Image (cartoon, each protein chain N blue to C red):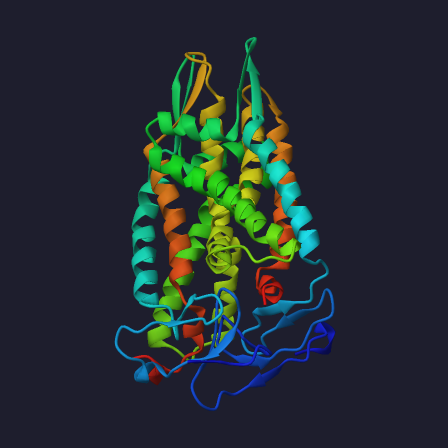
Length: 220
Length: 200
């Protein structure tokens, strides 16, 4: 702990039984080692009754299933149009990349970069990073733990910004309603993209960052 | 299972245990192992958080009922509220996107404010509300799914995209969303853990 923080927290080693912090209220309880816990028993925080887990149940499996589903849906999310616009003369369909391209041509370079980061870069980063985190828990537990912990915090910080394009299409479809003169409608690609965003959020919620710090023998 | 000392804190990101010492206001304590934030020294107490939450409620009602965007094309003006936008997407048959938008833009922020008021108002008068524990736990989940700040930027982005097509103006709800983003950031920084200090 650096002096600048004003805190003087001393790391503790638990002598008998693991110390479990309640993720809801923060109260620290002395748990029972996982191998001595009866089958089906759940430890609960004595203050707020929140379940206390040595690690989140099926954390790696649940992360993998959400990551794989998101990776599959990422293809239609980018290949299919997310929105169509109808004017008096013609009908146009717009993909995610197409929308960014339009902003770029219009001269809104800053906005094009923001949308590119939110819609393209963040989902790819999340799918790749969560896959790497889930893989390394089992296969490379000692590898760059601090960097992996930082990577997970970054994912949690930026994850929900991918909803940006979903909101834009929802608002455009709601506002551009001038009958045959001009109208905007959502297209199936939007559903796939929204599913990718929700699945990557669920994947991040499923992953237990404490697993990064476990040694190989500590989970069977 | 025994209850360990209250003066302990365990890093929720890596399970490292620490002996807790009170932090001075504005200080941030980080885990020495994984660098996650262990706690903050708070500048604002529960009364201030309550005041911010009441403000957030008023601002949220504006965001809910006022127009978010109005556009004019050929003498016709069309405007939409946020619930109206969700309903429009639902009517288009894209009901899953409508649900995702409603949950992250309307329901989660509503619960975020409502549950906090339910917990903070009794505490301000020295009482403990019924179901305090479940409410605080629900607040944890709700704050993950509230995406007001993303919606604010999405609204601004929509305005830019619409400007190419017609005369687009932001409605009162757009400004309310901007204010709500700042209020939520202030409330969120205060955290939830400290609430437990007032119920024992």
